[in-house]
Structures are given as structure tokens and as C-alpha cells.
Length: 165
Image (tube, rainbow, N blue to C red; front, side):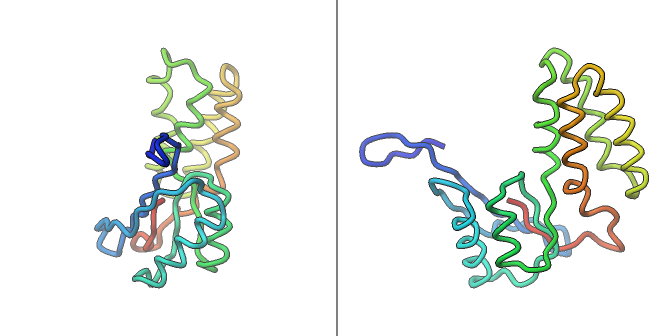
């Protein structure tokens, strides 16, 4: 976002951290505007959240921010990280012409409606086969994100406590 600073508009990162508890209720945990989303930013932000009220995190979801992943391993040891499925889908669709994008998203989005990892992997293979002839970059994006976008499947009984960035 553009933020006024010293009589100029500068690009800044606006970060909203949202938590989802056992009941499924969303809670905004933090909002920050900073110059970058590097490792020190995320480490500081997570430490601040832990100091204020964040007590138990089982899964953290974000786009593929390397700084965030580093901060999780530093501040939230043992917490699983998952890539945001919306960002993965957008990145996979980016190489596909806009005129046909509306026909394509059903495949990637349906990945997250599958009942278990076996079904997800089978569906992913079908989607990749369908995309790789015409849009190999889109197929490669899905294959490359597979491990980290499917972290949460299957949930044993209830979804884990998680935070979304």
C-alpha cells in the first residue's frame, strides 16, 4: 500500500494476522505496516504476538514468504507451515490467458474439497496432466506447491488451531 512519508508516497507492506480457534471463529491478532516482510520483521511480529496473547499455534498459513517461514522455525518451533491455497491458485493461474482462466480454477480449487491426501494427490495428478500441455508453468506451480499447500490434510477430528497471514 502507498503510505505518506516525508511528503512522499512510499510502498509499504500491510500485514494482517488472523487466528482461527477451536470453534472456527476468526480473530484478528495483529495489524502492522512495515517497509518489508523479511525475516527480522516476521520474527519481531511473532514474538510480539506471543508476548501479548498468542498461546498455542499448530498450523501457520501464508503465501511463500521466506522470512515468515524462517520466523516460524525461530519463534514457533514445531509449528507446521502451509502455503495459502488462494495464493497458490492465483500463482498457478497467472501464466494462463485471462480469457480462459474462468474455465481452469475449478481443478485447482477442487483439490481442497478432497477427503484425504490420497484423493488430493490423485486429483492433483489429473489437474497437472490437463494443464501441462498448454500451460506447463501453471502445472509446475501446482506441483511445486503440493507439499506445502496440503499440510493440513487430513484433520484427525477437528481442524488445528492456526493463524493466517
